[in-house]
Length: 306
Image (tube, rainbow, N blue to C red; front, top):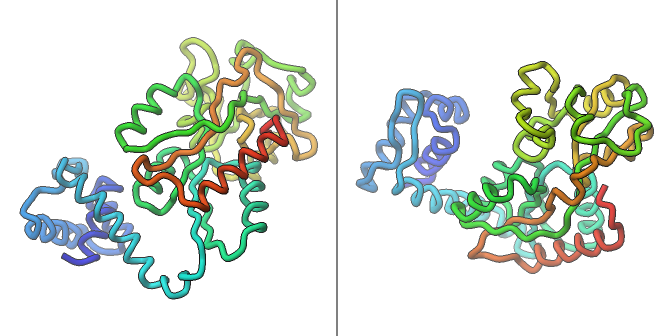
């Protein structure tokens, strides 16, 4: 068994396809299949079920995947262990958040000899980073309506969530929006609006706040939602058009961008939990625990998260 076999296997599980794996690793699909087969032969067990539309990991393969991820991460650390032996490490994965970025920046500047990594991703990206040990702790915000399913996923993945605070959703609007001067809005007001949302918003809060049968996909089918991963474009369109954006206290800090207003959505106060996710069996390192305490301090000093 070698690292190449493990790398091909991990990427195959993540991508769900030998074809996609070949593209990601700049090789051919038959070569990927051959490498995976050699690993299965060596371990004398089936790791992936080949299907018409891709591959699916077996129960035995899932266990091998966990070990393989850990081995690949640790093997990479061996090469840099000499350079990092004097440094303390802190690896973070988080939902996009201007406020959290600012808190992390202040914390990092106060620390000495800290080997830090901060990556932004959606909820599934946070789960993957924790599972692969490329992050020690993940920070996320979760709508209360999603909490049951969220905790079921945590249990399955052997993770745990600690709530640090609650906030409510906000409607962000620019001067060309008809609700720009509104003191607050209701769920009914939201139904006839046009939105610009981040790509991963359908997995967090977003248009799910709109009541009754209407959901995110319904609004996209009607052409009422534009998606982007560009924060600059999001801010520009909010300022210059009648598009609006639903976010929460730890969403991009749009209200600080001059003309954009953050308008409370009535009846949804404290409906979103903000907190951190970590692996149950590992807990937090000294650096991770200190960063969490620093966040708590910042939240206490400024009660309004946005």
